[in-house]
Length: 125
Image 1 (tube, rainbow, N blue to C red):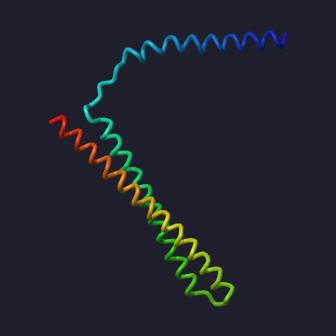
Image 2 (image 1 turned 60 degrees about the vertical axis):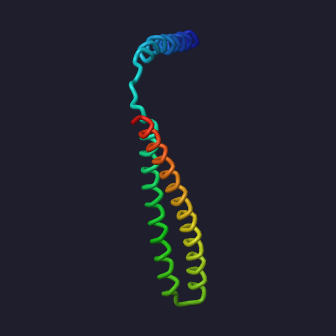
Image 3 (image 1 turned 30 degrees about the horizontal axis):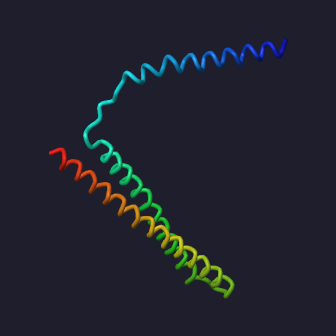
């Protein structure tokens, strides 16, 4: 009895799944979205700007972490504390350099995306 119930449930699930796919596909195919001539380029610029904002925020946090590590290194009392603070400072500087490189790369991506958008807009005019 249990196996028969399970088989009926699986069959019903498959029927609903494949039955609904047939109903949805023609409705989606009929709706052809009208796109602006440079919509893809505009979307790329928007995504690049959002990514640059995120990378810039990360870079600013890394800069703050370096400043905090410098303060800790200066305030260290013992040799052990100084060594630990210096190690943390080196790591913070390495992280900041990595974030700076990522920020520069994203700025270049944004510049290229804006360039492509301007070219597209000029071709449309």
